[in-house]
Amino acid sequence: RKAKDSSSDSKSQLLLVVRDVDEQHNPDELTAAVTFDAEWIWSEVAKPPQRLSDVFRVSVIALPHHRYSASAYKAAIEALHLKLTSPAEESFAFETGFQPKVTGDLAEQVSKAWAEASASASPEPAPAPPSEEAAAPTIPGVSAIDLESTYHSDQVYFETYSAFLSQIKPWKNAMFVEAFGKRANDLINTHLEKFDLDMGAYKSSAVAQRKRGELRNAMLSELHAIFAKLVPRVKGTALQKFKNALMRPLDNIDAFLDLVERESKAQELFFLNRCNQCVVPGAPWAVQTERLELQASMQEYAEDRKSVIVQNQRMHELQEAASRTQPKMTNFNFSFGFNFGF
Image (cartoon, rainbow, N blue to C red):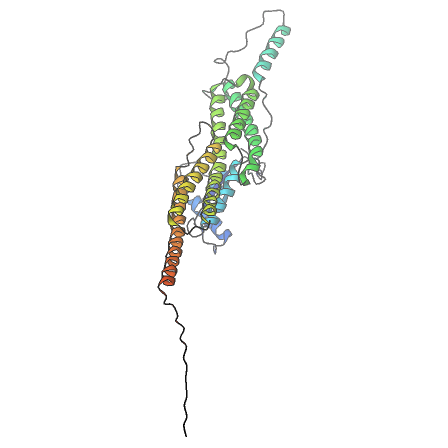
């Protein structure tokens, strides 16, 4: 695709991404160093005498250290992902239009125009339109119909995918999306139906079917990213509900253990039900890892609460024992008499 900031020349953009860059590095110096190395590698390739900059518009993106600056690294990766793959974002690096557009019924229009032109050209029998095999291909080994289908598939794919991204944008920052799996599945089916409709006469071509599969996978990938954010939030809600239940004032350890067993099952069931609502039917999405993490977190918190209750129960028992063994105070009356004789 054509980059937004591309000039009138036909150069392709070459994006070089460097990770684990120290924050103290000067961006201009880094770009110069990376470009110099790329030019050297390019010079070793068998080709016409051209520099790398004669063929490509080179740009360099520096990413922070993936371990020491993990949060900044993840944010930079996410921003780069959106820039390259999300047409709905303002930062999208490419042009968002196709010119000229190829209509879905182009093949039918061409056949009709050919028949009309042939019929009105002369009284002689109209020659048959050239067959696909006889037509001179623009690219050796590729028919004109395949080229039209490929171009039109790209156009419809881009427009459909852009509309899809715009619709799911509110979900990306939502704390929870009710019935996410069903709503996401309905959205996928709606956009696939739109893709088929817009493809028109090209719908059954191999190129269109391949592009349709790519569109479905791309939509599932975006939805899985949202799903991956929703599951930890559901897990956090379940854990907080478990903690709140265990804050009841219980001095009896047996009653506490019964409460732990009952609440752990209830919150695990809550977690699974909520997550199942978020899974798109047929998608290979699993929450087993998060389920085990929830179980471990509940067990750890229950052990901490148990130690507090055991300690309180022990102190209560000691206080009762002390009150039973404490000696009673006896009151004594003393009388003093003095007899003084002189």
